[in-house]
Amino acid sequence: MFFYNLFIRLLISFMRIGAVFNYKLKKGLAGRRQSCDLVKAEFSPEDQVIWMHAASLGEYEQGLPVLEKLKDQYPDHKILITFFSPSGYENVIKKDTVADVICYLPFDTEKWVKEFTSNFKTAIFFTVKYDYWYHLLEELKKQGAEIYVVSALFYETQIFFKVYGGWFAKQLKKNVDFFFHQTRHSTALAKGIGLSNSMTTGDTRYDRVRKLRERDNTVGFIGEFTQGHKTVIFGSSWEAEERLAEIIGAKNKDVKIIIAPHDLKRVAHLKTLFPAAILYSQITDKESVRFLNVKVLIIDCIGLLSKLYSYGDLAVVGGGFHSKGLHNILEAATFGIPVFFGNQYTKNPEADELIARNGGQSFEDEFFAAPYLLGLLKDDAGLKKMGNNARNFIEEQPIASEIILEQIVKKHQLKQ
Image 1 (cartoon, rainbow, N blue to C red):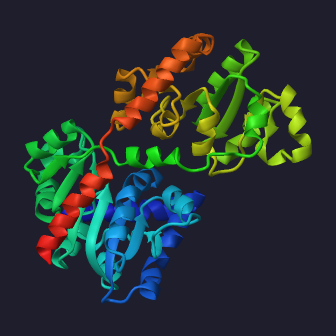
Image 2 (image 1 turned 180 degrees about the horizontal axis):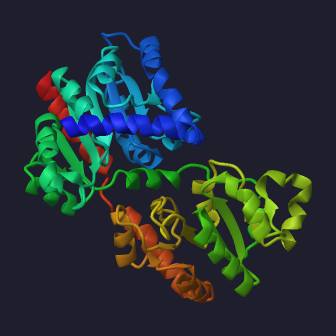
Image 3 (image 1 turned 180 degrees about the vertical axis):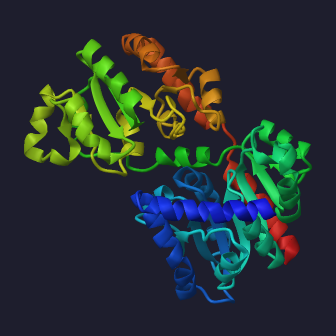
């Protein structure tokens, strides 16, 4: 415990120092100072609250199908969503959600956790994937909350599997009521360290992306831009994916390219790479005819990517060519297009599964990827087959959120 508390103090200190130089860290610290005030304003100590914690945006998307079902099941309960990272909070705070309060999770000190949780009664708490905080779980269990982990993902390099990490595994065993795992491998690892209150339910993100096809995915002007040409969507792109777009654009004169960068700060750089490209924000009805001669479209706003995949013939998803982490490949696969990415994705088991089903492929770098993608763009039958494989892969996954809901409701009823 001494070393854990020391780690938390060092984390706070480093974030305070980093905030001087980093705007995101500054916003995160400022947001945490407001968290207690936000819950005090909205909740009373008697309010029954269903609380979902997500480290960032990806974990939020995994937990959301379960949270929505719990809200339907318990409409009188209030809803709290907390985040650790600014990237998750800043994206979700702008959306319509089921939450009564969205805020940052206070730092995991006994004092701050007690102050925050004393403002309401937590009926059900769940964290998503692998964001565990010692004092938070300890305090919630003392208060009688039911504690779950949704889309849990254990892997061998986590602290629980180290000689010095057994104390944390014991804490999870004591405080977490149940683990709903993404994979059988994760379930086996958990049970190997005594966390037998576990079952494999699959990844809740499949539930979410299946629903994407049911909405209106029309994006203004995109149909005019593609004009029946083969179209490659570069989603959440970084440097390597953008270099790949350069190669494909130079080698295939007929293909249309849509680039949605991971960070909008990259738009200016993209304009230097593709000087003839048009920015989405520059489009008007009168200018739509220009698409006949424009090959590259740069998306300089957020919130469109998951709809843009519906216009693609194949997708290249960013993050996998470096250690930052692979972005969401399932949003593309659900629309029945093959998905390509870098090979650094150790925390994304769905990538291996998609490759095994021949619905996607990974590459060491953009120069290995380019010949494969250029060949596939000329192979209509191969392109269609891989796209069908990708869609079937999504369709065949279990409806994880329904399985999880059933288990939580049973346990909640037993407690009442």
